[in-house]
Length: 212
Length: 212
DNA sequence: CGACAGGTTGAGCCTAGTCAATGAATGTGG
DNA sequence: CCACATTCATTGACTAGGCTCAACCTGTCG
Image (cartoon, rainbow over all chains, first blue to last red; front, top):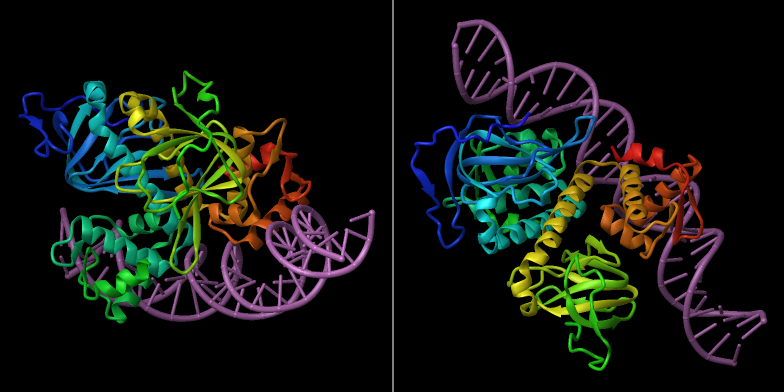
């Protein structure tokens, strides 16, 4: 169940992260196909990753199949920083992706550079707890879209890399509720759903209001 | 709204954390009264804290009064590690507490020691997301009690430092649901509620089953 | 073009929330 | 020490938001 982390193309150009100021992640590029596991729960946490292209989901499962997505990682995001005790999440590719992979040990001297990524992750997790614990379905969806457009959105258009099921499992809802909520937001004129993987925000202010 | 962090008793014995191996937190002891704010949302994040006695809640609020408690900090827990951009939480004393307070700058050279605390916090936050997103009321309460007894419980008795409202806001429920769930678990013989601040776990196995 | 996975819509149900009343515990002043 | 006030917890009746189950639709790809 462990995705092979052996570098598949040792001759590939050694990828040095372009965003040096952010994280001098010296590693190698690696490609994963749709649905492929980057790492699984219980694996040794020897590597740290940075998304180059595509999106990754961090998944937790209950025995009966209930699923919670803790986070989506988009291009530029660093993930996989953990204590030694083994992965507590499964990370899977949503669509085909390219990551930069670096040994954790390589970065030990460089730990300060990972510091902010770890703390940023904590902050996002805590913010998401508020959503999961206290927000209504429409607030959750509005928050999700607003967050995505801030992270990736060109001129208010969000290209959703993930399925409805992924959205639902991230937001603590069902696919039906996500779908109904999108329809409802559309009929209110707040968004335009143009194909199920693309949403345009027509009234960002209306959505922002739902966020607070 | 910012709790005074000026040290109130400069002559107090300089507290060097007993748990050296864990975190060499060299700071001063400081006392807070019931409900007193340790720090508030927006404050500068200049200090790091460790709980000596009592319990602390980390609170997030929405404009309309909805409240989410991201975490409870119990004796031994370190909290308040954040990026520079200001507190995103309010931390409040539950009952009278004693903390050890250390300047963040004091610990910069010592950052590696805070590393594991930050990552442990991230892990706890991610685990809690699963609870908030995907578990039923009885599963949430069972999880909460099991967690507490692991962290503090002597022989299966949990002394709850927090009110029902705090529990509800941590679990993403209402006080009524928390209360009803406790009653229900009691009538199932899983727990014994002995006064509203003390619970004895009679069938930890039954609770553990609800946790997975 | 047909098949299939993924998405939407509808009907009914159920869990947890809301509103309200009662009960227990804690604190204060006479 | 007791009476009272106040806050917190429990219980009940009812409501509602989101879930379940099921049918239908859409888009994608061979």
